[in-house]
Length: 276
Image (cartoon, rainbow, N blue to C red; front, side):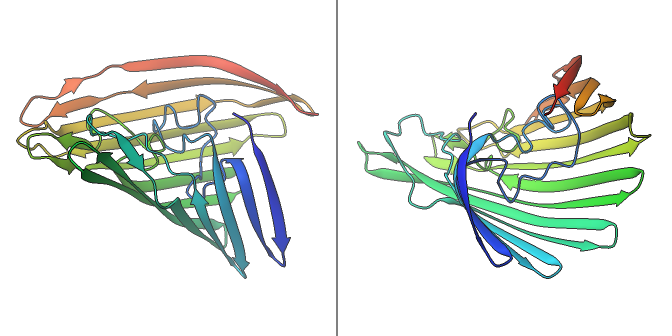
């Protein structure tokens, strides 16, 4: 993806606007994973690319506040007969950052809404999604460790959070939208051995659940993953990082049925990077 954005600074605050990668107030990776960044540790967490947005940052002493209006995603559209999608307001996100000694905290959340319309029957269906979360980071040389926990509804911003077997759905028999709940947590850390070697690792879990109705099957879908890598600084600006990671798709449990193991995927490789 490409980025194209500008920034206006006023006093201690600023406003950024344009197509920004990772500018979400809720985008706060706490790991060093190479394979997609949480693609293994917590599939879907923070997986956005660049989006059109306006981000306001206001430092207020020891506290920093961010508020953003973002191009909303309609990737969770679910009514098969819908002939139109109406987006009246942008997705909204906000975060508050503050520190207590070596501990850094971020409380964040987001919400988005759009409407699916069926012109033949003149009916409309609102798809509302949201997410809230907490990040805690601890840094004390030579260690850095961070953790996060979050809860989202209806796959906030489409693929930004875990979308498993039971996403937000449409019960055609009852003619209603059935919500889906996602929860997850992850932890990542690093130990800086010396100027040349670093050891980093992380682990995360998540779960998606949707209730069963008369016309739509529900159930629970779980996933987890872990990684370990070893960044090696060969020379100034030249780093090679071998990594081993596992995506475990864990169990899928249809309502009233026995859990089914979904297998896993193992990755091993290395990235080399030269910066000038």
